[in-house]
Length: 195
Image (cartoon, rainbow, N blue to C red; front, side, top):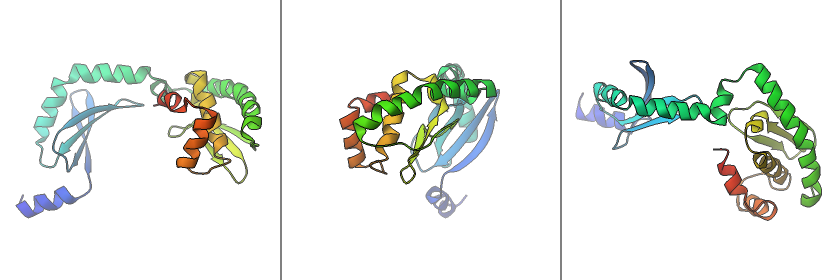
């Protein structure tokens, strides 16, 4: 490859390819970086190698083989997290989580509405993989992720307070954070449990 072609590739967006290394599926992401990074991503334990453009594929395969035991340990750890368990959940599991969350949310709403001076609209419950809740300030509709049943109770309360705050402030800027600080001063520590 010419120097010009290599430079053009390095300025391009990251490129992904799926590579099989023995028993592992490995996503190789080539981009403009200096070092190679190996990660095991939740919730399903996906193996990713970020590598600089031009890194030899055999070098990446050797790295993965050398880190085989570490990768397995990380995948086991990821599988034991609530999000890891949720990734492989059955319909019965999801239905049970929904029952648990539905049994607690109305009481939390009832507790926080007078404190915050807001009124929630319709409540909905969904199995969501990318968000813990949502709020439509115009209607007051609040949707709560049923996967919160897998987390400590304070996480569910945090999400309820978070969504109720959106009835006052739609975004996540300084005003929103000030409200969260006022109503639930330890919200950042609770939020960290959801990561």
